[in-house]
Image 1 (tube, one colour):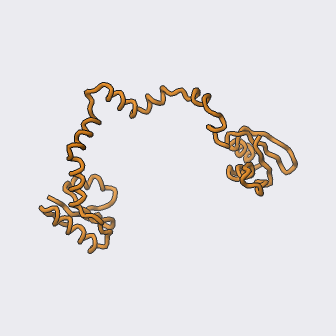
Image 2: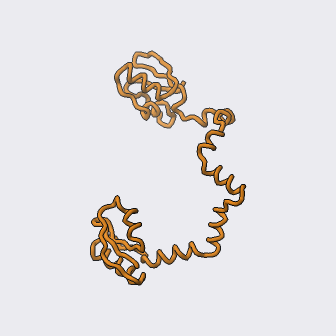
Image 3: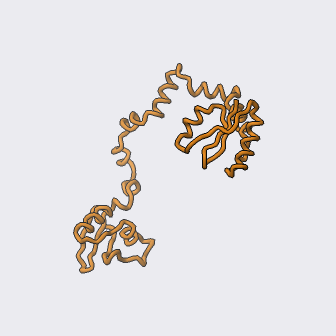
Length: 190
């Protein structure tokens, strides 16, 4: 049996399992049953007619076509063999491989991140915000901070002016040679 339903104000659809569909789309709104048909082609045709009549978006493909294609793809012998091969739990190597690929805690616990950082270029790994920043006040007083976040936090607390990372980054970047100051202060990389 094929059921045509409407979620009021959202859509008109077709399904074989009305209970499952209600559970899936419960959050979308109130669902009402419009019609039921024994023939999938008749249900597909009526679904599209009702979509047009009630002012909803009309599906480009028919319900019968999508159901037939999904069943065909899943039921081919090649698809079955591939699905069985992917879920072959009798092979210990397959089990170990699947667990290693899905067990995030195990992967992160066994990773030595300090060794990874030591192998790579420090500046390439860390963003520009981790570089030291020198702040030059309007009076000419130079103060050095460990990074842009630290400079923003310290300057906002001590001066009371809200600095932002984009302004500081723009002052330090060679891409913007015309942007020399931010809120009256000059910034440069240490």
